Length: 277
Length: 277
Image (cartoon, rainbow over all chains, first blue to last red; front, side):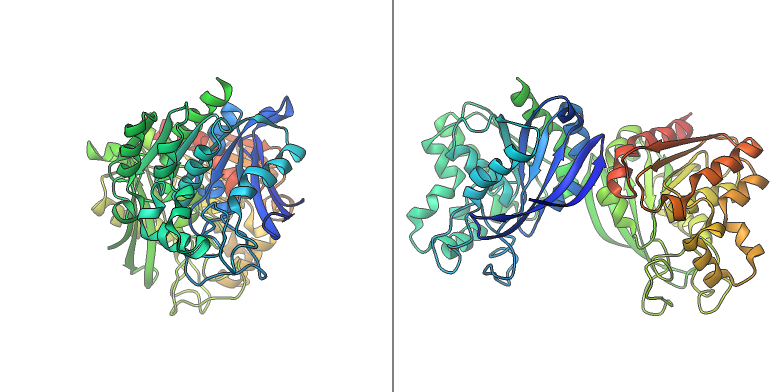
């Protein structure tokens, strides 16, 4: 692991690191915000998964999460959104290929050698965090935005008990039913739509519920709301199976980090309560 | 005035506008954050001046000012840092020409037709804000970062009584004595160093003090501290003439928006106290 940048921020330490990922077969970059409490003892870890095109930088620069994370003693880890680099296959589109990993294990060529973001987030990166930071890995939570909201929901639902809490800003909740997800799943997973269901939060929650309330904030003026996000589908699925869900529609807000930063404190507090409860 | 973008953020409204500036003889872009209180009554205005290379976007995206401005009912106006565009002269350097207006009126060719950022900030843009937003222009304050801190200090000192309060993050306080300022002043103002003094906070405060405490935050690990910023020169000048000054050296912090966002709340509160006092 090589540290490429480091800043003091809200009394804590924000650092950016490169490492050679075995899982993804490429060099990967991630950021960690360590709150000041790490100088005393290991602190719980909150994973933030970003949306299409993003890297670690979007949330660390624009998300406004350091203030509350510092106050409440929560470490934040922000991975990249896909494998990257010259030897990794790519696509010209913003919503497929590099920057659009969709937190799954690809089975189709040429993606299957590198696109394994679910394994990377659940296995390889946690072991790096455990070894290099004052992180209490027995206490982890996860959240994300848009494609990263999809990632947070599906990883939490596929690994019940692993995360103490899960939340999302404007998540893709039903990728098998919307253009972003259908394009990505067809490309990474092939034509067999049965295989897609393993990465669809609406499908997953019907099979496996979590004993924690899932928190979702969604802007009502989000330009992707009706075509790509469809939070009502997840609300319906949760209601059917009795999954506790708090979904809050926010009039006037769109898909941007201006929306995310507005409700960031609420999400950090939601997770801190579970992580320290 | 043409509105080019608009977002809801922390219950307020962030909007970005283009207009044809007579003062600068080019099209200019600026951003305004209107807190929710503007729906009830006009609110005071806090000007934020950015540093070298920046536009309105740096502070609005990374400064984290909307939360506190929204809570305390302060409108924020973020202008650009220089005239811009194809017909405006430029220079390849990051610290001269477009993006480096230094909040002065140039007298040298080819800059003198466009580079008049002090007049733009003090006269033209305020009249646009007055006409288009619920702004109480009897109550204004100003702050900024680096070159923008220089702008805030010099505009406040040159216009005593105009701003109710002034503060800065890592300001250039003695441009006549440091490379950034010397290069810019020589280029915009010519070889006569006597003319430079009209834009040097250390010189100005010796002639004219303010009846408000000037607030400055400065990172001790700022890479520009020793060569370009030299806050001790301003501290010395203020002490000589009895200008109230609160300068706070911050161990571990650098020149970035991670530093600015950490102390942003303090600055907004400092100004809100003066604006609502």
